[in-house]
Length: 82
Image 1 (tube, one colour):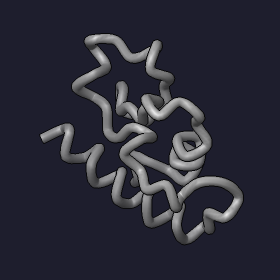
Image 2 (tube, rainbow, N blue to C red; image 1 turned 90 degrees about the vertical axis):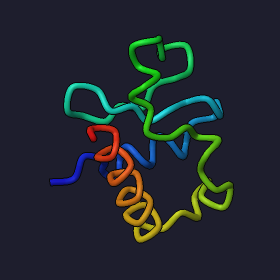
Image 3 (cartoon, rainbow, N blue to C red; image 1 turned 45 degrees about the vertical axis):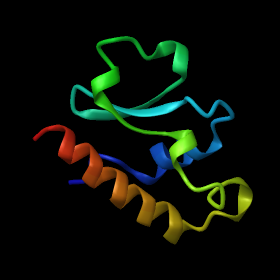
Image 4 (cartoon, helix red, strand yellow; image 1 turned 180 degrees about the vertical axis):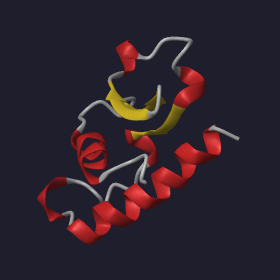
């Protein structure tokens, strides 16, 4: 079962704030704005918007690209648990 899905990736890509982050909290991935990320969340950050390629923005992102990025971020989220 995937920890990171296409919708979480889409939300992260659509974020205007480059410090918006995908965070793995209590078994689920959440997209949080920088002001919502406190000291408890910082170790749980999977990726920030600024870390993603600029080519993955706007309406040109395909489902395949979302799935590929979701897979990469899913692996990163799993690595947090190790």
